[in-house]
Length: 351
Image 1 (spheres, helix red, strand yellow):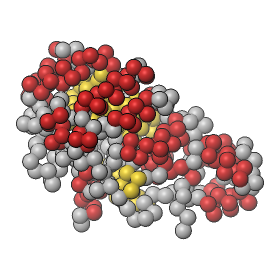
Image 2 (cartoon, rainbow, N blue to C red):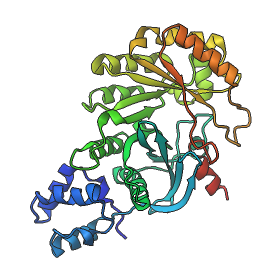
Image 3 (cartoon, one colour):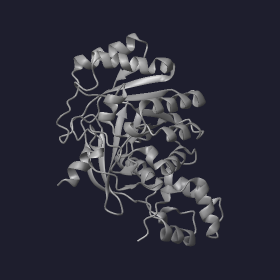
Image 4 (spheres, helix red, strand yellow):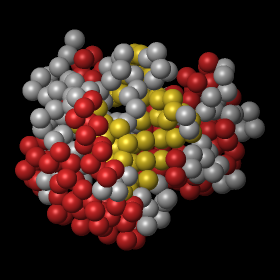
């Protein structure tokens, strides 16, 4: 059975495919209009295409590479989706409601090899990378879900922060970004897209040269190598000095603000001393830094970790603010469902 998703083709890719199959390349924007503007779910509904072209599309591509297995809706509107891929593997996607719009958090790999000790995603090792089409399809499945509600809601923001390390699947992620950003398709603005990395320094440098105005976030979570290496195995390969040098290069080339993600774990990384270490780490780049303090979502398999108290988080925040480090304590979403990234998938696989 053919499982190649048409969502994986950039507009240029689709034009090339059409020419190779004896079609005119002007058909590509027409097809994209059907896919991303009219959002049809069957090739046969593309009524201005010839039967021959529709048959060729049906023979070579699928429109829905994901099968929806579970949907969990939170009281605050946050919605978690468990999708099954064509090879029966499972991934998660999350829809979140914000004051500024609707955001979808996409997964880029089946499992994860980064080895973060606090993360449910890392409980299952990486089985494979997702294709660009499988990543785009997550956004489309959520948009179709919204379309069916009939409220006229639209996905306006995308965060690449789900299961997996995006920069470990760099080429597919970059194709995904170009596809969802294209003005003839979903037209999600580059500044409404954020890619998160755990610190693959060479890829941070490469990302600085890509030309897209997409936002970058670094999963930092600790102010020094000793703590970070205990929390994140990747730090042993790319220690903080190397990662921060890559960040400096990114900032110099792009002059774009970077977000530092910092999960607050009681007794691990949340002391006033560690807050002051974080200030020292970021002080020379604070004009382009933004720290996102994240309340830890406990994972049953990681019973050694507990979320920081409100008092500890506030004290940490106050030290950063006093030292002119822009920061916020992140508002929580979906606390009444499987909130931690990868938790829904992990629970389903363990049944």
